[in-house]
Image 1 (cartoon, helix red, strand yellow):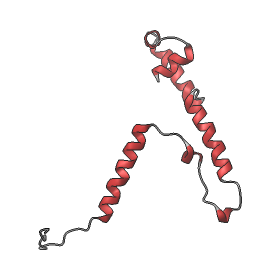
Image 2 (tube, helix red, strand yellow; image 1 turned 135 degrees about the horizontal axis):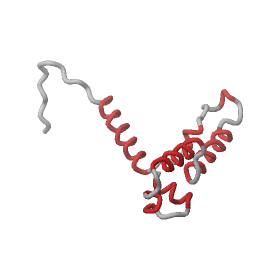
Image 3 (cartoon, one colour; image 1 turned 90 degrees about the vertical axis):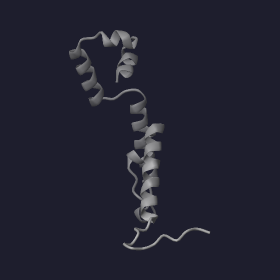
Length: 106
């Protein structure tokens, strides 16, 4: 948030850090009400893409949300992929029955 505010004000982050807490809270609340910069661009692109994707007969398409088209940070995508891989592995794993012996591989 600090870098976003510094870009908005055209000041380095060190000067923004010197602002009083009340000013920072006001700027943070303003961004939450009316986001600016890449987040807003991402949101607008998602809205337009979902409108285009949802055009046409309902029986031929899956209804898509604007959230389906948002660009996600690389870290979030990696964490999501890791979680889905673990979930898939858990689904494929069969629970061992009590007293069952494990057969050694040849």
